[in-house]
Image (cartoon, rainbow, N blue to C red):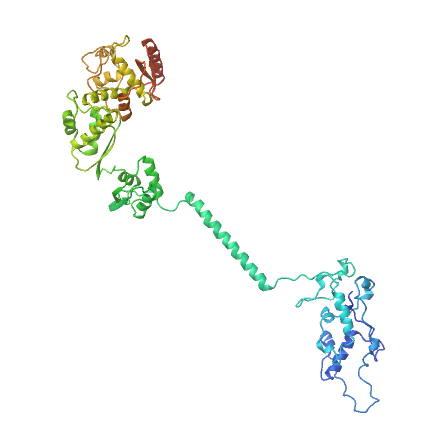
Length: 530
């Protein structure tokens, strides 16, 4: 045990008991002397609760026989001298037994802190040497036993030697804990950082979840809408910008779903001024941008391969012009610049999508379609109207007979048949022309019909080209007719109507073998070859 916690009994003797005074008693005695006995409460009173009676009145001056109340202070020689070196823990090992622990050992505070009154006016009190020893020895104890202000220590706390085996003279620096203010600041910083990370995680997560959870906006309006909203599409403006503007103007409910509908249409965005309604369906707003809004424009679409009657019907439905009026105009092809041998506008009504302002005359509509075909022929170097007409006839057969990838070879074989040869004798022998003359779409016709010369489009019975086109050729077919691929083929047959696979042959025997492949496909696909 540290010397600071031992009541040293090496002091002067108590005149009342004949035993040496303890350090505590010597301090109490010293305090009593310093206060002059004026109602000072001894230190023992705070520990035991017993207040001793006040000291007797001081003896009268000159009464040498009076006995002092307390024993005289020890002489300087009675106080042990300060050891040359602080006692170590190992030096105190023998005091660890039961006899080494005094029952009334003073509290640790008494061993470390003392009132300034323990110092004599004329210098250091002899007991200060014991305090120095206690202090020096305390520094050799484990940091758990170092004194910290405001910390309570107990006399029954285990001695450091019971849990630590320190080398002589070893010491450890006390652990200094941060102040409450520093700890509070650290907690606030940690809380702030945690909140910042949480908010950031929520913001980032919301961006990822937004497409999955939706934005809460409706995907479309029920339509048809009301009022008028003018929107201008600038040159080079993207669909996203236009879609956002339409949503802001409440033309469409959702810019994202509108863009999906626009891209699904396959159309392209053109600059200009457009008139919409508020709360339109996405499909109706797309039609406005593509010029398909029938309430504002004349719109119709023609497919490649349509015959004249089918084309005029589609134009009538889109323009509101009667089929009879359109038919009357078609039967006078000369007013559209066609040659005299042309019977009508068959083959010249170019396929495509068309938009015209409301009220456009029917003749102007038909003239625009004819011009699209002649412009393509001119671009291929055919300027003579008679040559143009012949090219349109060949192109219409190419369109009806072959797949698009084989247009060039089909056109080359047609021109080969028209030349003198020992296989076809100048007869085209194409089924599509025969059926056109019969007014049907089926390739199943009788041998009698095949031999009927009264059908001017019967290319089995009548040599050369038919008297006119058998449908409306597209641009690719026109280009193939204008610039056919050079080959030696005389025959061709499409053996698969789904893939449009076409087989070419130079002789009739080879061609008949390919025809058998076509018949086998027809048997495997009932009802497809009617």
